[in-house]
Length: 288
Image (cartoon, rainbow, N blue to C red; front, side):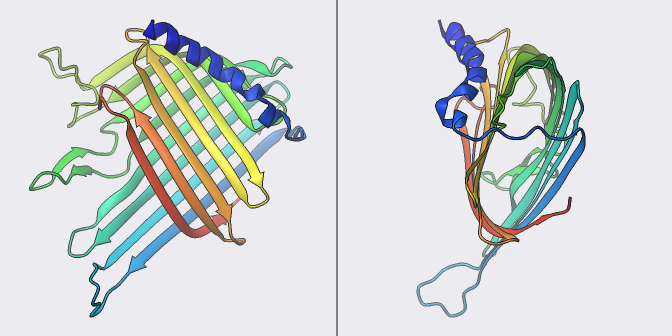
């Protein structure tokens, strides 16, 4: 029964794009053929300092750098979309050493063939990892639990993509191969605890669903969301979820406020869902 529910959810998701909410948006004009390029960078800073402050408190400093890239080659019969997300930041409180607050590298490439309809076949490749080492600060001394490409996640997929004329939502559904690669930290990312051998590479085949939303709520507020679902054929009732949501409010030409909520679930890593939330204001600059 659980597997049937999961399959139904994945199949239904692509058709959510036809909801009345999005249908009310004006139809966007078709982009011209050729490359469309966009590079947007951001820097967020937060600092607090105390000197003879009777109410108490600790000095703190936090910084975060974001870089988002998008390169799209739109032709008469094909669309090749490439995107990259790079984020890194650290915080320091009191006498404690600096600790990273965010660390993400994500790349995606999707080639879509146009049949002249809203539903078209695609092939896609995605990769995800981090820049620097990650630590468990619950132990003394701290314990390293991850590093660059340790783990690294890679996925290749083929299927059908759907994009209505409003250009707010686009979604795709297909068959995917997923690899989790580790080196020094196979557990809990790639190792199978049921076997005596330590596996450093885990390969899975299953169903993939990816839904992107880019909704301009008002003149100065934009909501973007990316929902990725993956269900391996060996366990269709265990769906991996990666859901990243960002509200961006434009204060001026170069200053934005960003509210980010990310939900992550992978039973192999943790039996409980993981949730990350951040609110930041900083400098934003477009390079292309």
